[in-house]
Image (cartoon, rainbow, N blue to C red; front, side):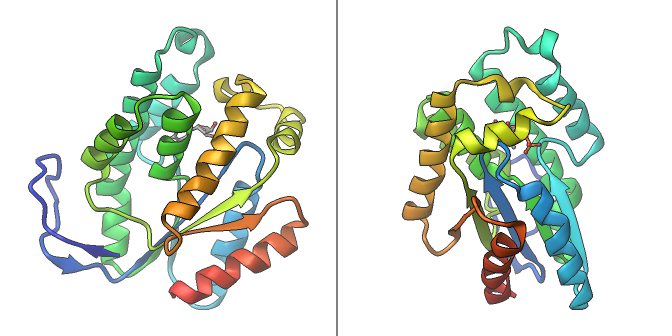
Length: 225
Ligand code: TMP
């Protein structure tokens, strides 16, 4: 990842002009797309190839971030949560994660594998919740500055299939209760993102066996290493 100096004031350990040695790769997709199954498999493969790997998940991944995760997932508290609050909480958790975890690992030359990053906010809060996309982009930029993944792979899946997978699980959080229409928007949001940023954002068909999906994702990962 290349990082340039910036005027934003949120970074105590901001890194001035420098090229970070590591690589930052993120997995994205709708509910039940399989990214959380893929992530450890990719990490194991990278480690077997001799790379140091750090995995992150969003929201969470730091002490403060895990507390924010609780707030976001707590059903009773969250019933009346407005979309603007939700947007800010995801971004707050991410800002913390970047400075505590992601940037230091990239500086050490590690590969950071992220289970979701700011594209989730663009798609879920911007496209899904239908917040003003320019405002969402502005708030994301404030939180992440120029911490942009080298590669983002979207695991694309029909939300009806994904939701069926998720509903078989015991843990079922607030976001899983959204309407099918919401998840159709999320899916379109990811596909549009890949059209807008084809160099960074790649799409793989998540409706196949985990081995097939992994093979395609690995192909993209190899190209950025
Ligand atoms: P996951 O643990 O299955 O990835 O679920 C996290 C949930 O949080 C999922 O429904 C997507 C949602 N989410 C957002 O709405 N915005 C975000 O910025 C992030 C990171 C997650």
